[in-house]
Image (cartoon, rainbow, N blue to C red; front, side):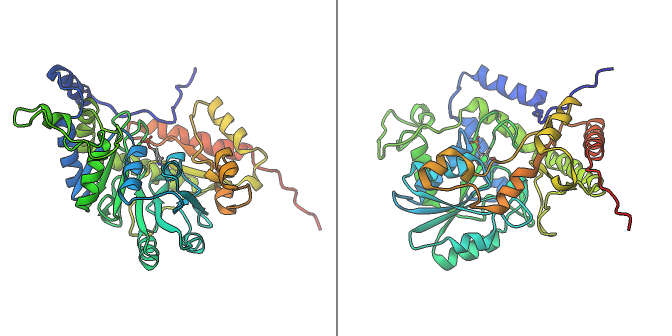
Length: 393
Ligand SMILES: *Cc1c(COP(=O)(O)O)cnc(C)c1O
């Protein structure tokens, strides 16, 4: 009997999301309008930030954040090497230099001493990332930033919704969220920038839509007018109402989603802890809350007779979809050619990357799917255990 495949991810979309989209289509107001504004209001209340600016990706939110703190050509911005391309691309596109930093010895998140060791006078900001949803050492990062007069932007693409009992989103000057299809809350494509700083919020809202003083919704609404002023050469990064309507529904399910991810994550931790070929992901400090966007195992390759790629192939052959998060930035051709980074620069990040496998973890996963993932991963580890020869003395 052919077993059903378990995909790496399957989005949680219910009839309520479908109805919400239908309602927007029927309203005939398709672009940024009442739904996007409501989504911003609900989101800022949810994370406890004064302002939320809805955009069409996390990349867009990061770009607006870098723009808000006026990162300029020649500036340096500290960025973990262990992250997705977007975190550093916004720095490069502002003409600034991404100063990559290593991961901590036994994890994925950035190493604080690595940041401190790379700060020089041209450093202007730190972009922190909560890899897989494990809260990074924000308190430590804030204190280093304060000491050196640096801005802090959070790439919270993985981190909705918590940090040590507080919500991520109002803790740093600017925080960027992703609503990409696989993230903890999705609109298909989308993102949000949050801040407590009114000037940043005003500028980001303007730059998001052509650098104009008002948005289309207000201009065409009855109480608005046809008049607008262009005050900057802006971007086009707004979130349309069709997608915002999905976000409004998803936001209400956010805690339930987190609970489901957490149940799966904790079960994986419990079951894999008994297998010496598998290194468990760090779960952060005891007082922090993991969002479990990803569950990243690291293979103990020295005790396995197969490579990470072969391990993934064997899981795939048995119907378990996996992925790799992430190829550190300094191993990519662009960062090597443009900034001179090379293999060997960040040994902890390279070690984590060379051994990591992201397992399926999503709210719609059934208990039997979770059980099958556990069994197949454990069997694959056991079957490929390196044979050790006992020395007879
Ligand atoms: C997904 C992701 C992004 C980009 O999100 P988009 O919404 O696709 O732009 C940025 N940073 C990290 C760490 C991510 O995983």
